[in-house]
Amino acid sequence: MSALPKGQLLEEVERCIVLLNGGELEELINKCLECGLSALEILNSMAKGMEEVGRKYEAQEYFLSELIFSGEIFKRGMKILEPYLKRGSGRETESVVVIGTVMNDLHDIGKNIFATLLMAAGFRVVDLGVDVPPEKFVEAVRENNAEIVGISALLTSTASGIRDIIKMLEKASLRRRVKVIVGGAALTHEMAKELGADAYAETAVKGVEICKKWAMKNI
Ligand code: B12
Image (cartoon, rainbow, N blue to C red):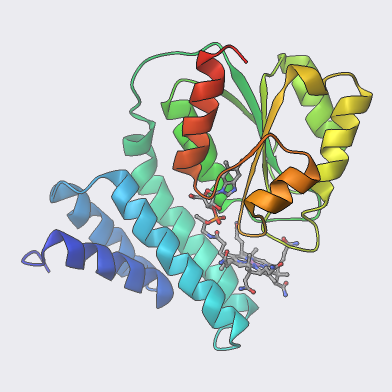
């Protein structure tokens, strides 16, 4: 395996996720890091593998047990990468970001990546977890004097919960104080706009870029 070029190593990482090969994945991640590949490059290949797992689930080649297992494998890989991802620029911003997954949605892998990258960029992150009711977002914004709210949504059926969060922020007179960014496989730019968000990002990296711009302008 050591003789594999970098591109091929990354393909192997993707394949390990698709084939649910957790043991080999951990070995491979360490090998990739030794070869000088960045944690972000490795993470992107893992995410590609997850997309394929999703396709297999849709095609009924995989079932719920495989979905669960893929999530566990991903999280184990993420644990190895986290310390590398958290080595940020050292530059601190004053901004607090409250993040969570919309109510009735239990997916948290993408949200966790977004949180890790935000911390690496110097943001203070208040992570409310998954299946978060709208009022929890409002409470957290108020208590932490947050400037940004990040919401993750992976299920089409529950993505409209984002609108409830935004409406509740409006009702609490907090909407004008915060920017709302959303992400996750259930969303598009158009949907995000329709739901009342300020921004949508298809990747966590792009999401952090947007937050940095907001923080620089002091919102
Ligand atoms: C793993 C997985 C699970 C795991 C989740 C484990 C976990 N701890 O998260 C488990 C087994 C729990 C699960 C359950 C279900 N799942 Co599921 N799951 C997936 C799968 C395969 C991968 C998701 C994932 O982690 N991807 C990897 C990460 C890195 O990608 P990501 O989340 O998109 O995040 C990236 C960006 O979107 C972005 N991002 C994400 N959030 C945010 C937020 C912000 C603010 C920003 C800026 C960026 C950002 O950053 C990340 C990195 O760039 C997807 C397939 C897919 N294509 O998404 C299906 C998928 C999401 N699941 C699906 C379904 C149907 C279900 C179930 C209903 C299945 C069932 N019959 O029970 C349940 C629902 C449970 C619930 N109430 O939530 C469908 C949803 C279909 C739809 N359109 O609604 C999908 C698309 C599979 C499919 N093709 O059918 N699932």
